[in-house]
Length: 420
Ligand code: ADP
Ligand code: MG
Image 1: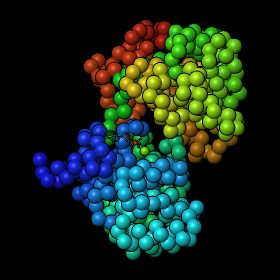
Image 2: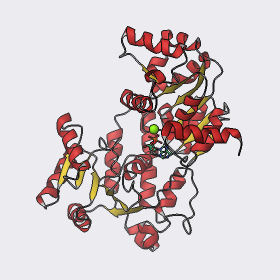
Image 3: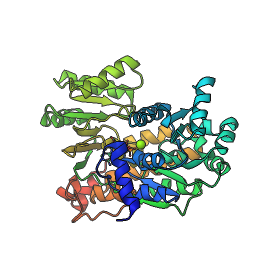
Image 4: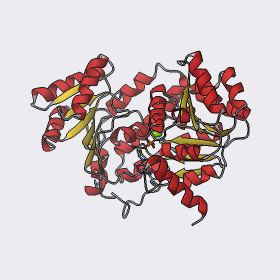
């Protein structure tokens, strides 16, 4: 064990109170401390923040953290401040600050107090900020949610495309990219756009061995099928995803009529109702939330026991994220998707109004969902392969946890199942 190693364990305990690193964190932290460009791919909840926060806290200078959401930045800054007696240890720099506040931030950075400076990408492009940041010692730049740089990701943000040229102006400092998007295409985009193809790359496994995957053919009887499923999981928490607000309302209503405690959630409901329904779910006043994809970001309910897709998702990436909300505690998590080719056509039609380049990407992503739904191989193997991960469907962790592996279809059956 070298002294470096002893130090980071000590710092981990000192700042975060943890006695152990999670997954690949230790290797990542070492890579960053050594001054390398570093690329981190870990599923949501994997502990990416600590990967750059710990090096930032222990190094000279200020680390710039680029993050797409102001709300996320505020949470992180509050969390870091709670670890220290020094309020100026972390700051946000954005357009909502007053002149006085900006002056304070700059003062703290210059005096070396500030270890982490959170900035939105559009703020970083501002000349007054870049010229200031050029003049102070920086440890590194961390780009959180780095998939925002790619059109193949689920959350493309054009401002992310300017990051590399701005970082170059700031000097020769290491760049750390972090994302939970595991598709090889997005990763390649990130590395290329950030000009860090030689970065030390750390990729955690995306396998969720406790999740069971099943795809059922969507028929007219879908509603009674869902009701039966929920009654078999009586009293358990679950989420049902639907494509449209109308469908959300319809299904929530059908469930209620059938004695299942369920609430709807979609962007068409006012903020108060949405918050109330979300709280009811978290507090277990209701068992089921019927929702559009507006529901789920940042929701951390550990004991969600099933996630049902009434309609197929627009990409396997979304499917993974949405089903990933089941079984966070390591307990049972049943992921059931209903599939009909008609829904694919509906989604395609929906996309046809968009710019051609976007359409092409959308169609390609959708084709992968179709292939997943129609496959007769191990669904876990299929999903993980999509994320660039080879899974051994005989001996891998969770190998028998899907419909295809449990009940292999004969070729004829498999073909009959496809409803076009
Ligand atoms: P991500 O950004 O990868 O989704 P976060 O950075 O938000 O994940 O971390 C997820 C959770 O894991 C947080 O609650 C965090 O406190 C916890 N965590 C991170 N590192 C450790 C660790 N070494 N030991 C225990 N818990 C950890
Ligand atoms: Mg994160």
